[in-house]
Image (cartoon, rainbow, N blue to C red; front, side):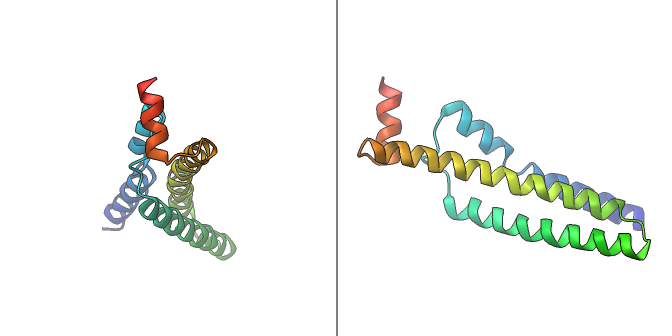
Length: 117
C-alpha cells in the first residue's frame, strides 16, 4: 500500500507541476493574455509557494532524522515547477498590460490592434 500511495503522490505532484503549461504555451503562441484569470494564477502561485516551502522544510527534517527523503524531495521539486508556471504567465500578463498602458489602451484594445496589423 505504501508504494501505491507514493505513486499517487508522484502523479499528483507532476500533475500540479504541469497544470499551467498548456496556458503558457497558448499565451506565448498567441501573444495574448487578455483571458488569463489573474486571481486563479495568483492563488495557484501562492499555494504552490506554500507547498514548495513546506516541502523543502520536511525534506530538511527527514535529512536531519536520517530518514528517506527521496519522495519529499521529488514532490518539493515538482512544486517549484508548479510555482514557476503561474508566475511566468502573470509576468507575461504584466508585460502586456504595461505595453497597453504605455499606448493609453486597455490590454484587450492593445491586443486587437496588434492582431489587426
